[in-house]
Length: 253
Length: 248
Image (tube, rainbow over all chains, first blue to last red; front, side):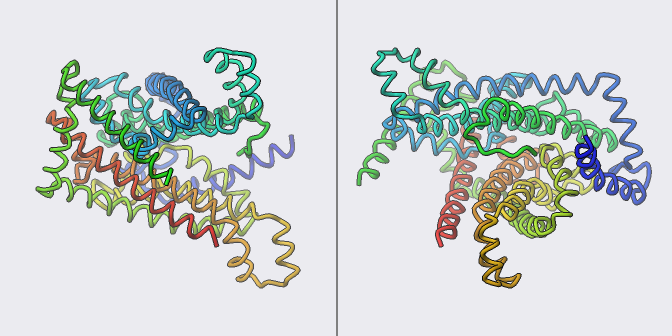
């Protein structure tokens, strides 16, 4: 308990000093920069009156939708790449041509295809989440103990039975690393899509705050987005440590 | 030899996919506005390069990305090295740095616009701020996870501080630093595109958004293709440089 208190103190000391300096140096009532004492009440207020929750749930809906689609497709595709080397060799050029496309580059295309709203955001997030899932699933399938494969063949398991009871359990720890990266990415991409084009969620709330010259509000959203990111990361790392710790190198942050 | 053969087959498969794309487009089940035939998209790409528009935008984006990424890399490695060298600084600063890393960089864009205005400098700064975190944190990780026995050995050999850094710490940290640099590069390209979409100061990002606003599907695909090429080339160059450096 004492060490926990100590590490919390250590983690908060520098931010506290920086906030204090910021508070003392910044001029009040600016149009482009807010003091911490102006930001804090706004941050508290959007938490209480539900606007934060409303915007966050819009962002979460898109992030979760895109994450589910992208990760399912990615894991399936990645396992196929890892299990069938021929397939991997054949799809190398298409795979490596499409992979470097930054997901935000698809925002205008998705906009043109689906219009504003949930669907266009889900599509972009799904594209982004596909790659880490595919890459880690591919690596996972390549690492599967060959004897497991032999056994399942000898048992005469069908494709789906083999997938479900041999391949997926054996590769889950590595796949989960990809899933963790994809989940963090889903939040980042959905906020990005909202900042860039889509009028919904946390990202758009920040843009509105900027355009209506409310720096305190923009900073308040930034603060909460950071907190959400930290909590999400903590949750994912905890899941990984609890269920998939064996064989994966990971540090608790 | 076999590798070349497989690449040829893979290329053939890519060509087959393009043919399927053309076939689906010719059915016109999807609106050609956002699903043009591949040859139409290709023509738009060639046109855009010939009349110089696309090339100019690509160069604008590329230079912003590189300036931002290089500043981020320099800053990240220097700061990371400094922070790693003192365990006191590490215990007090790393939690804050981890918090900043969790904030999506694109969310810092509205704040950057408020403070710096809609300028080219703002774009470069936001790219640098976004790309600095992976470099910084992986540099810290690299310098602090040097094998302790190596350090003991170096002490026994009585290496001075500089030799210690140059011969032991840096080579040990380099793989981590390179991993950070590559993630930073990916982030740089993303932030270039997002800030160009938001500011309208030229570049491929603006090209993409304008193409969508004017329903010019083929030009949209041409822009995405250029971005893919930029991403692929930069990543390839950095990966090759990394392999060369790390082999010594």
